[in-house]
Length: 94
Picture (cartoon, rainbow, N blue to C red):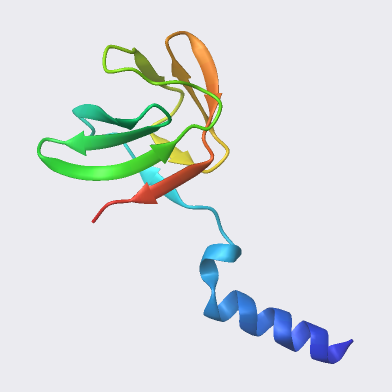
């Protein structure tokens, strides 16, 4: 049992993406573009902030997007064209 805890601890230490969700602060976003029908890239001016994937919602170039909060993470909800959409992935763009 002790060996399992050691291996699990090492895995969390070496691969932190498995232990925590990706998050991004979008309070500075000024625009967004549709990368695909299920992915959006948010920008602050010309600088990309984050890429957000929405598996169950379709995003169009003229869609309306409303953030529920300015700091979003995997599994949070945003509103696309009046419909609540669950975020499957948030990837920071640096």
